[in-house]
Figure 1 (cartoon, one colour):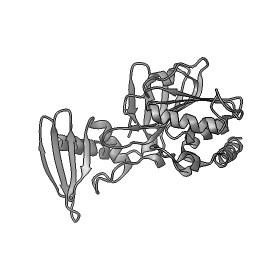
Figure 2 (cartoon, one colour; figure 1 turned 120 degrees about the vertical axis):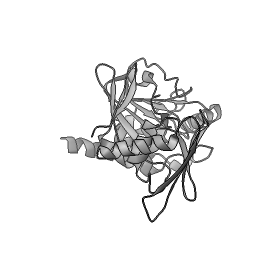
Figure 3 (spheres, one colour; figure 1 turned 45 degrees about the vertical axis):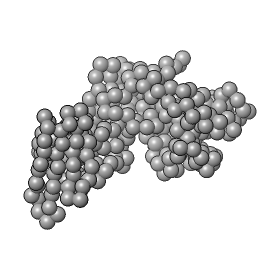
Length: 291
């Protein structure tokens, strides 16, 4: 039965992607996601016909239009955008395509609101699905999005830090209003920090363990910076050996913190990203890495 449902969903998503002309949403400062990238989001979000969907971050409006097609006339898509000009442009495109709820004669199942990402609207009826279009800082996913989602509903967000763009995490909301999530292993991305931190799991564990740390590639290694304390470090690794050369300065020993996180993760067998468990509740947000 599960396979049949997935096949039906895949067919509905393919139909929705085909029904929306992506080129109509390419003018303006925000470019729409690729069809492949959006298909990945849909797979995680799993929207169904008749669903009430909240999208935080309208962007170009392309994702909004595809969600509109999927949920159909008996569903609703509420989308929020912080930038006034971007929201206005997206709304005009959605009006022209007959989707904006106050205009047109088509599906008219979309409402565009101008709001900051943290200002999640309170629904008259709970959301079935919530999608964050932009990265959400680690530990700062607005709990209002979870509180407004029905039990067994789904919230999808890319959890990022200064250190890495982070993975897409699919949360399911339980009857107590707690969202439990797992990362999509195929979605993790970030900057390549040479052999030391080449894999998404290693970048992500450092991002969790070493807050506010930024880094950049250099010709010979990586540079770490903490803008809060003005601490910095430079880690060099020879391509022909495992020897590291470390220079650092400031109140925080950033290189020590990063290397300690890597050793801690290695000692636990480097559990894959998809085995991590994420949780968002009214009074705390955490990630559990078992191993």
